[in-house]
Length: 196
Image 1 (cartoon, rainbow, N blue to C red):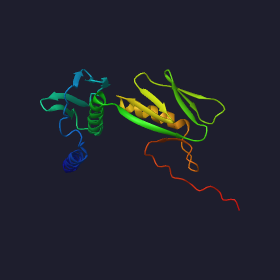
Image 2 (image 1 turned 120 degrees about the horizontal axis):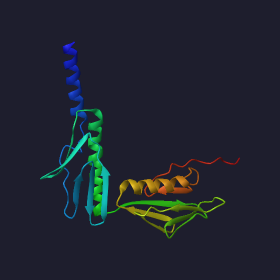
Image 3 (image 1 turned 90 degrees about the horizontal axis):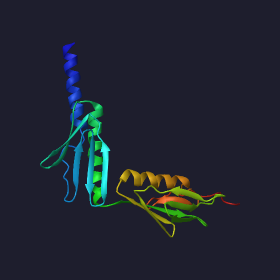
Image 4 (image 1 turned 45 degrees about the vertical axis):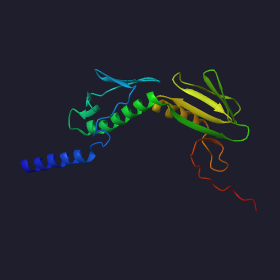
């Protein structure tokens, strides 16, 4: 009984060693002009372009060390070790975002399809019987030039979410490639039916 418990503990420790996040092994360096504030259960990052903050789960300990920001776990659980890499990645994205904006580009293809920004709305003509209007979040800047929509913002998740929301309105179809596609996205084309 005791031997089986020992082997369980050994195998679990081996699991933790192999599955520990590589992102969180070293402290995250804070560049000049960026400050990280750690409060009870939250973390905020300030930089030249703005401020971002997230809530921190109690399974993870985030603290400031001379080399930068250290992320460790409170308990040796699967959830805690899964969160290590998540928070390391989130912090790196926040640091990058407050220094330089994240950019996503969507290209709208199709005859008669149009896109323009009016005030805080993105107006689209997508071949439907009605025009489509999408509200632009306050923290994002959106430009539409010659059916190329450029989405910029300091929050990587919000930029990606808005781009995906717009793309979902008219996904690219495989025959003529009409619809929204990301810049550098390759649409696999299908051959249409041949007339005999």
